[in-house]
Image (cartoon, rainbow, N blue to C red; front, top):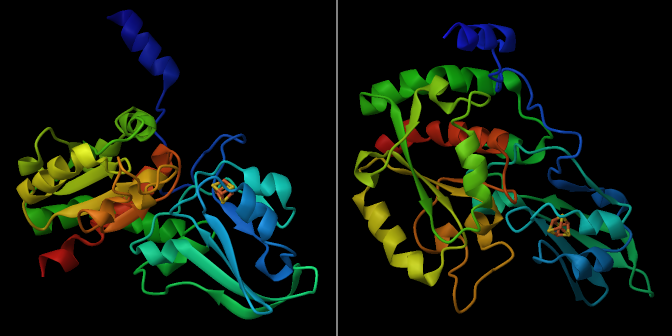
Length: 294
Ligand code: SF4
């Protein structure tokens, strides 16, 4: 008993103060890739090496349309290895409320050798995200997230009359995302400090946290779980697989992203997204509770 107390006192508080402070990610942790769009010389090598098709390009006459889809990106860093205009960041807070907000596109005029001459159209990105700033700015405003975190319990109480409950649904993931989700209940991330709890039944849940590229074997189970969750239910798609099908895409065994089966409120990119990215996405989804209730 005394040993436990002594150990606890010597360890002190290990819980992160996120979202009040920025995520404390390892220097070796990879975040989303960033492209220097204005000075990008050639999209073809990166598009060729990208294993998920997250970077793609299409030529028409003397124009090239190049795009980066963070919903498909597995943060592998291969594109940055072959292209100096691309760098891997440590930014993990990439969650958005609209699938199209994860896609950036730009058009280039071409030189005779097929390299880019210049950027001819401004970078396009869907602004109807409800959180556009979160998609484009390296780090969202800590103040706005802090306020959001403080309001989580209050908002959940007002809308639901109690705390917020999450049911995790593995719709065919490799369990990489589950490992990170388990971390949310650890003393370091401590999801329960927001009054958010994991529950065993969708009938007790307000939010479904769905991982995996939705295997065809899990499709019916996912639909039934969604139907069993009472309104106003929130759905958060976790990881590249949940956002788009990821490395698996759509094939004989998988349906692709979660939104190909049920409506999704928030998308959390990453492969897998770390607990900070998950916290960010969950807090973002909580902000939708009231609008869904109306
Ligand atoms: S980091 Fe993303 S965009 Fe780059 S090669 Fe890997 S999957 Fe493709």
